[in-house]
Length: 358
Image (cartoon, rainbow, N blue to C red; front, side):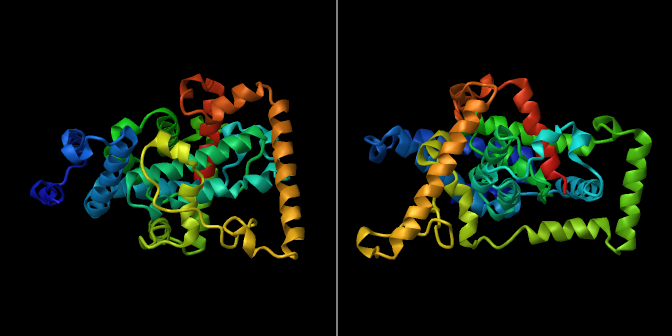
């Protein structure tokens, strides 16, 4: 608590605040390890304690540390305003995304709906801890990788409010020992997307300079005709995506998409348990004694559905140009991020850019 209070003694400076917080976490970890009460604690228990400390402190300091500077607010506003214009004409072909990735009718969409990636990224503003915001990015990118595996993307796109502030917040206040491997790979890709959007012009796209300028001007005029001021529109987008910290059950999906092993790889505890209410699998939490004869038909239908999707997934992996083990390792294994090819990384970034522009 003394550390939290001490923040008020210093002038606001995000870089200095971030360095001070990282030093605090390192000092507290060392203190925990040396304390007699933690002498018999495992590495996992110590790690979870530090993760819990990060979440507690950053939740308390959120109003001071997140997007508090005029410069951050300006960059967030410029990104939102630019995206509001680009959404009127930008298409996959402008980013050299092959037509094969427009397969909306793919069976895998039932298992990994394209809209899920956008929803996961938009949830980022519902959380106040850097680790939870990073989990939203991981979930979004994992869904995208599953879609790319099956050559399918969605026309729905997300214009994530306060993108710059969220990325800066994670970079400064996420425990540095955990911003590595798969998490660092996906995070770096989204940072590249933000930079690309800021600097985007005709040379960045497969479009002529004259056509680009005409399209941007037409988008501005369209906004004026509808009476929508860009600055007001971007502010409304940001406000609508910043709900109170008390969240509905579906927001917990950002945690539930990660397995316990993956959470351990990321580091930290998950406070939320997956919610199954209203899902397609309503029997997940039912005890055997609660089942009736009438439930058998429903359970058999669900079983067949799962088997069908699993079989199709295996066949899709086998048809992939890479061997199944290598493809799955490239997509899922947190220890082999550096093995992901430049081509795969480029595909991910192009789709992230297209998805972020709405």
